[in-house]
Length: 90
Image (cartoon, rainbow, N blue to C red; front, side, top):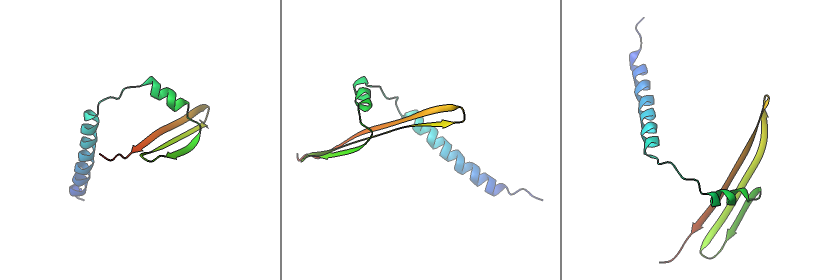
């Protein structure tokens, strides 16, 4: 029985191109820096979501803090976000 090489080759080219694109993208991203003032601001957020709107900008915050266990290990998930959208007439 002959091996169907065409479908295998198409899959290899597809996954290879995706892997190569991901590799090149990760190589171009520069490492971020950690700002301690921003970290402290994220730690001070209350759990839940808030939204505030002013004439020229809108602000939103969100924080989710959960603890869960997998087997004998316990993990804590702490996700926080600050967002601002500003519109100005120039």
